[in-house]
Image 1 (spheres, helix red, strand yellow):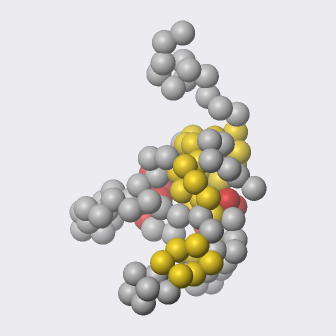
Image 2: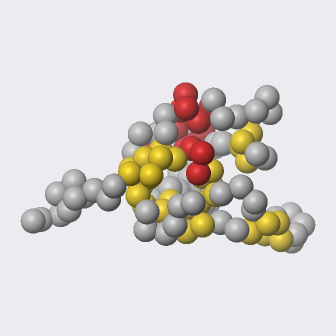
Amino acid sequence: MLKPGDWVRVKSATEIFATLDSNGRHKGLGIVPEMTKFCGKQLRVFKNVSQICIETTGEIRKIKTPTVLLEGGICDGSFHGGCDRSLFIFWREAWLEKVPAPSPTQLGGNT
């Protein structure tokens, strides 16, 4: 199970699509087109998602399948008419591969 601070590589769109069922979901969670811009990129896990509030009903729903939020993994609305909500994208761990932390040079830092 991934934890905050872990580094991951987002799998390719082909790898992600291979995990989806006939309804375009992985254990109930669908994908949004904006996710594809993160494919192949390395991001750090921001936090694990264990429960969410369904906005339309106020219901608190437990998340049973390992799911995380990624630092910078925000929906930019580019495929949804320029929506400005800037929501975190939910990522199933099956769509991610844990990788070693990049060096400061890879992150653009000075050594």
